[in-house]
Image 1 (cartoon, rainbow, N blue to C red):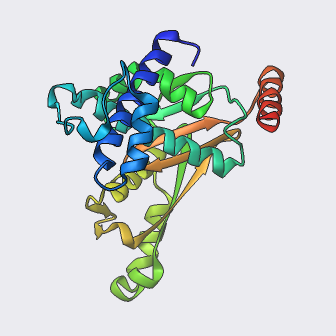
Image 2 (image 1 turned 30 degrees about the vertical axis):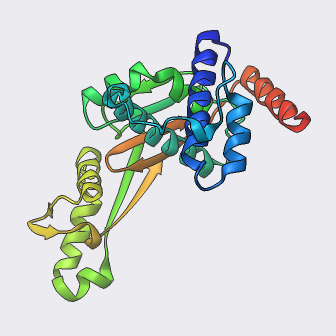
Length: 239
């Protein structure tokens, strides 16, 4: 990072982790622990084997920050999956990522750590979406090997009802299937395993979804982003 404060915080955290690790492994790998300790010790501290055993300081645990980072990590993972689906390397910068989350409080958490998510995904802008229907379409079909024996001739009626679903309703059914909720179509009660759900994407986008979260990356780039991507590739090869 170019942020001196962030760099200092990262180095301090790494130092704390390594010195604590040296104390924890000292009973099992005494020579390695001593080497780590002496390389990192401050003010000529004594041997690691004379140091006090580390104690947990629960006041340092930031539960809200942990939850926010778990959410950002999940969205970053989905974003990388979307990139992989489109065959776009992370080193290639992209113009925008669109994120759909479960509730407004999660949107606020993501927004507070937007810079981290943008850096992880190597994209320039973040935008939240309230509905997926303009970006992601759904094709829902009956799972015939499962429903055929159970419904018999009613399968045809169900197939037609699924084919004629409005985009908003198809999105609701897809979300219900992902979360394991009960589904009813044309008066027929269904489980997620009764349906085959496929997503269709708009041109120039790639999508990944999981447990009610949606991440869409725009894959169309500009000449400036292309040049930046080539520069990153050259730096990677040189390193």
